[in-house]
Image (cartoon, rainbow, N blue to C red; front, side, top):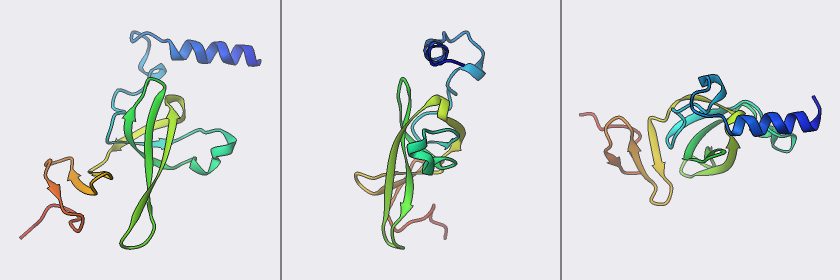
Length: 124
């Protein structure tokens, strides 16, 4: 495939109408809180291949999201990335979403905020 053919194909995929087969469109389940796996990436980002990324924003071209990185037992960090839909595959939804601006935990199943020490719903 020539470079011109590839550019034409990519331009076509970007402009597909909603009536096209689902395999040619971005998965509608990909939204903030979704988990996706990186299935393709440029050579300069090969370290991301296979990573599970939590989506923070759905964009017109793809997603913005992060991989949670454990720095120490007490501290975590996030490695952010933007990826086109063609480079990701929907895996599922995160059970816990952390608002990194406040470090407040929120479980998707009950919507209750928890303190940073809490790892799950309290059980007595």
